[in-house]
Length: 276
Ligand SMILES: [Fe+2]
Ligand SMILES: [Fe+2]
Image 1 (cartoon, helix red, strand yellow):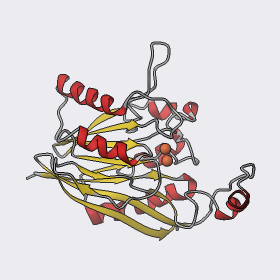
Image 2: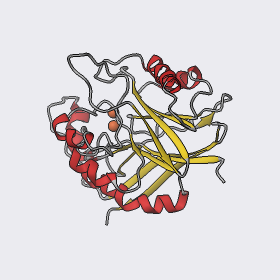
Image 3: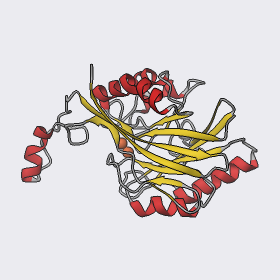
Image 4: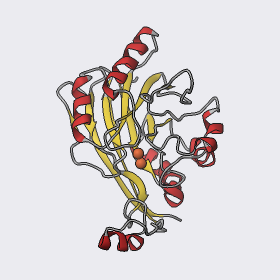
């Protein structure tokens, strides 16, 4: 009997210490929430920027179904390529990067995964507002992808979008623009969990940002002491040190979606602990 689906989605995983937090906690989280699918954004897993193969492989087998990404997807392409070339690669990248016949961006911007006769499509797009990269219009790109899914007759029960961006209005607009076509939309990238989780009248579940998996006592990933001169003088030359705090915080969201594709429940996940 299946008539609904539970998805857990987690925001950007940070660096050395906190990728261990994900590995340490994932079974506890799965036991507690019993999700059908788990989605994680690991764009900061190898540093404050890029993901590399070695670290992607560390989290590949821990029960995550899809990895999304963002503006740091290709910051160290050389060290990510061998993971992208794996047949069972679970990582998608923003679908709306420009491509040309001269240069193709590796891997794909959406993925279909199937488990226990449930089929999920995850789409990843990036906004160019306050990010470094110029990308194709994310709204039109998602619309194109949904058309392509239907034209290619790709089977699915539910569609979820990781919209990697900074501006709130874009996320809200996406949710209304796509009315009814997708079950939930969430953001990643700002590393701050927002308090606006809601289910719109069109049935789309929404939250602006999931937050992150990272250090509890840091400034996103950095040691607050190393930022002292910067914040007190506004001179940017001083190096920022990584926080070595072993206290972690795991933030994400739990979505329940009914078989008619309507989101029926949203719950924030906030778990703290200490790396063993
Ligand atoms: Fe990030
Ligand atoms: Fe990002």
